[in-house]
Amino acid sequence: MSELQALSLFSGAGGMDIGVKKAGFDLLAEIELDKYCCQTLRAAVEREKRATTVIEGDIRAIDPASLMSDYNLKPFDLDLLFGGPPCQPFSLAGKQKGLDDERGPLLFEIARFAGIIKPKVIFLEQVKGLLSAKGLTGQRGEVFNAFISTLEGLGYTPKWKVCCAADYGVPQLRERVILVATYGKNGFVYPERTHAPANESGDGALNLFGLPPYVTVGEALAELSEPSPKTPGTTFFDRLDSHVDVTPPRDRERIAGVPEGSYLAAQTQLDKSLRCNLSPKDTTKYLRLDRKKPSNTLRCGEIFFHPTENRYLTPREYMRLHGYDDDYYLKGPIRSRTGTVKNLDQHRQVANSVPPPLARAIALKIKEYLQNE
Image (cartoon, rainbow, N blue to C red; front, side):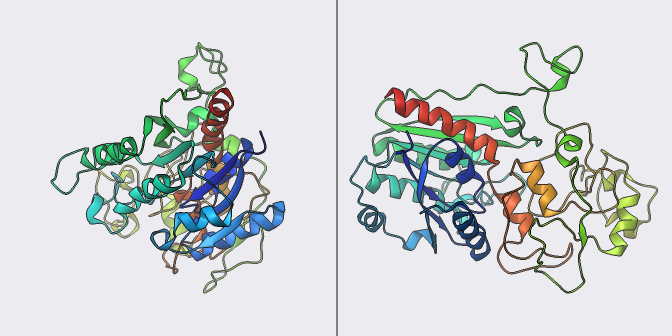
């Protein structure tokens, strides 16, 4: 089934794309706005000697009909249309502006493409907050219901489920809505989990269903070399694996006061200047990861502390916690912990992306569905 063809929207750093490719799909094109993500995508295309086109630009300005002409596609020729639109408008950790955020309506770009290209299957990833996001009339769930109605109006039957990446071998407790819509009837079946929490078993080795326990932070970060220190004032590095330590000296003092598995706000013994005026409610900010557990969900607004060393995690360590292979490389800047860069730095490229093992598990079931149909 190597003839299966897919089109990637909101491609980001390519996490979702990796999973879809590993499931046996050929990517015709990847569409992404961020220039550094596009550099990452192009580097992967060149390294893998693929014919995939990386289209850098605003998806709202791209004509799906022109793409069909470029790739000699007729309606229903494309097997899979997939993507993860910007999640910030719907994230429970953000301001939850929904459609009032200029990025909110981008969700419906997938429906616009589907209405013209008519793919056999649509695969969407989004934050859980989408399910309850308020619309223009202030009703909870209005945005998601409108999106579902739009897909149904195009002839698609959608299914959705909240999936945890750790259930599929990713060392991260990341929960996301996974929507799969098929044209006409929907016989798609979600994949069974391959891992489970260790506490579901008596001995911590295999749970009651015979599944191995979640992959831990310690397992994911094992056997990595020492990171390179970040030179003050620099944002780009020659080190290909992105294993670069961005920790300022003052922050090492703060990190040293946080025990493994705990968080900065709980360390009341530290001076207030080191605790950054955090409140007791800030239980997920400035977190030192625990080697014996999966990571919390990687976020764009901060970088977690290394479980044993007094520093922040490197982009390569973020990639390990997200399920990227070590031969996949990021391009673009690595920002200082307190600095900013235009567009997405490497930590944010990873945190914004879909874990490749989760995407692969879903895409394999989509492939199975297409074969059966």
